[in-house]
Structures are given as structure tokens and as C-alpha cells.
Image (cartoon, rainbow, N blue to C red; front, top):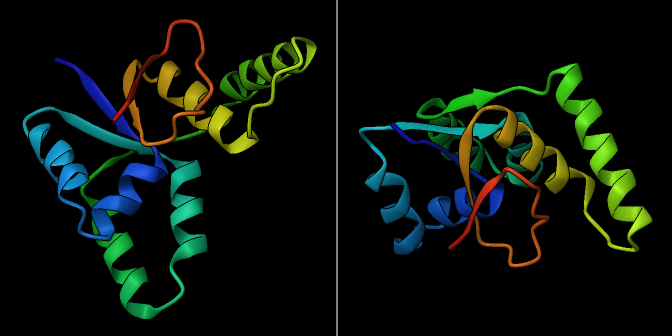
Length: 126
């Protein structure tokens, strides 16, 4: 069974009622669906009204939350150092999401075409 993890971009589109994102998440209803604690932070940051907060929390309750463990944080730091050494940029939060999803054995879905690709990460830009 595939484990599915959604980046914040997908979750925001679900909350906005965009059909493609909602259809994607619903299509995995019989499998494990997850997001990361980084996406929890990002959703909280953008939930500027009580209604948005309720909607985000309700969505998050339907997903398994993947945490940031010290070994995963270390791997993210190594990846950032490698990206910088290659002259490439990678947003810290995206890199954390990627390493958390990979450590959790998940396929990661994002709408961000510039999302950092890590070796061994099953990344799907939708």
C-alpha cells in the first residue's frame, strides 16, 4: 500500500475548494494519507480567520501527521549543504517537508514545480 503525503500547496488548494486537489486527496481515501508538521505550521500561519482555522484543523484531523525527528533534521541539513555547494537554492521548509516525507516512506505530492527533488523521494508535481 502506498503512503501519500501532501505538501502545503495541495492542502491549500483543498481548503480553497479546488477540484483537482480535492479529487487527488479523495482518491487516496483507502490508503494512508499524511502531511508534515511543517505543513501544519504553514497552514496555521495562513489561517487568518476563525473559519479558516476550523477548516484547516478539520482537514489536518483527517491526515496522519509526520514529525521531524533529529535524524531527519540532520539529513535535511546535509541536503541543504549539498544544494548550496552545487549553487542551487532550496527553501528550508520545502527541504524539511521532502526529508520528512522520504523518511516516512511516502509519495509526496506538491503543486510547486520548483520543489527540491531528493534522491530516493517519490515526488509527484500535480
